[in-house]
Amino acid sequence: MSDTTAQSGFSELTPDVLLEAVEGALAVRLTALAHPLTSYINRVYEVAAGDGTRYIAKFYRPGRWTAAAIEQEHAFVVECAAEEIPVVSPLRLSHGGTRGEAGGISFAVYPKRAGRPFEPIDDEDWRRLGRVTARVHVVGGRRPAADRVRLWPQHSTAADIRHLLDGGFVTARHRRTFADLGRAILDVIIPVFEGCEAIRIHGDCHPGNLLVRPGEGLMVIDFDDMAMGPPVQDLWMLLPERLPDAARQMRLILEGYEDFREFDDRTLRLIEPLRIMRILYFLAWCSRQTGDPVFSRNFPDWGNDAFWGRQIADLTEQLDVIRRGRPA
Image (cartoon, rainbow, N blue to C red; front, side, top):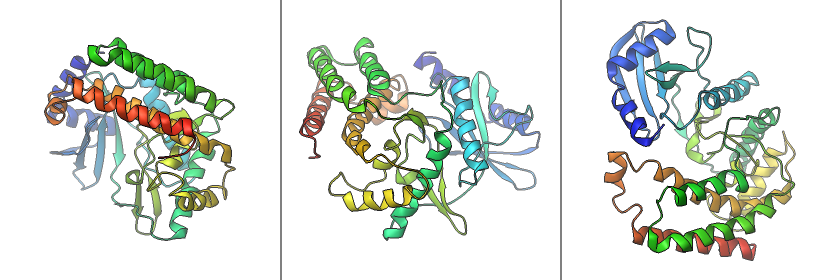
């Protein structure tokens, strides 16, 4: 599905369409209000039943994930919930599954769960982060997810680089430099991943996706970027700074982590390669939004010569960090 099709699909997602879809999926009568929530990638709404019960309906951006990939995300979250890990599971819909469809757009419905972003204050807070992440990884290691992104240089990163080049997003002035740099990045980081495990991971485990609920502790939310990848991906994004400046926080996270799951310290070497992979992933992701008028208004200089000059400079600097084997 093209980006244009994806945008037109969302444009047809009127309040009447989404309310009818959610009502049918839950077999409950909703009020006429659908409150949009902040979400650029997907379309997310808060809706309410006549008895006051509130739900969150997430409509997935068309063309981003296959039906199988969405169902594997849901299965992972449901498995975590079955192990009493604090997550927000998608509700079972009237047809028995968790993925609904409205006009070709996949959607899911969740119970509303409020909370505040978790801000670690003391040593025990950092250990708590490690414990909850390890518990998610214990479940993630039980089976693969064949239809999710494989967060590995020769898979996801090589595909991101090809997409940016083949799609004509890099300007002619910088195309050759970017292509050469992309090859150099892959040459350097592919060997670093040899022998490392890949399991189901959250994929976007930054502090904003960890909430505190009174009486319930930490809650992990938003598995939208769930992937097959190295466990350390879900740890480095929790850190306030690069290593070694955040070495103390990482040590505390790992203390908590190893209460539930063994961690291979050798995989700490993946952090800086994963950082450059995330930069390339974000560039590829943005390139897929260029047909969206909202994106163009918010990022008017995305994709011009000056933009690509800055990106190449940043990628070159990060590659130097990796080659030196230590953060800047």
